[in-house]
Image 1 (cartoon, helix red, strand yellow):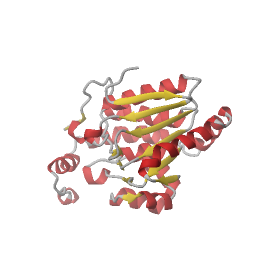
Image 2: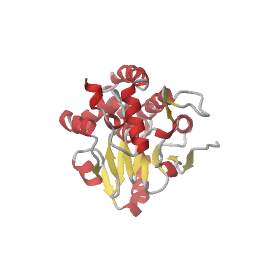
Image 3: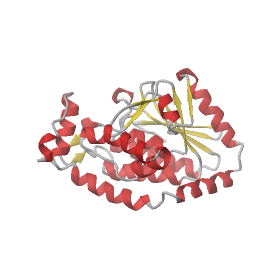
Length: 264
């Protein structure tokens, strides 16, 4: 399979989906998401694959969400993709949750915005000591009112989840470990080896047992699927607003946004 914006590898039962846009801190386009979805679909169908690893190329970022430079007045541009970015994002979230195989997020550098959501919905997260976690929606005129909020609250609790979303602060790998947001922190140069160790341990387990356990864990938050779909429509409409435009433009101009006028 040939891809432009990701790298997809399979070796000894492990499939690796690697976002390959390091020049943009692995921010994704609609095409990136479509390619990731195709890779996950292949990993699902391949009976030899027992574990999927999701990561980003380079050391600076796991993923920093949607590429703001592709955002237009009516939302993100489609580019070469067949689907709008928000629809492609929804499809990717769904397949990561439903693929009957454990998905490990291997995080180096920034996991911010929708990139933060991607690691949250993976079954396990292993982070390097240079990882940084956080949301960015209210700072750039966006939000995720589906799994990105509901499942996050299940992991870290309501108060902390609200802090993460409302304040748009960034958290170190050790802070993320303390709040239960990641499973393990390791030195940057040891991350790949640690992920390999965890993947091999999973491959030694009964695959049907793991699939059923994953489905059972997901059942607690499956109700968020409909809310997530509704939220995609809501954020699509929000992207037409002056308030959202101000957030994006301020980000591109590298200045603080002026949201005060939208409270009047």
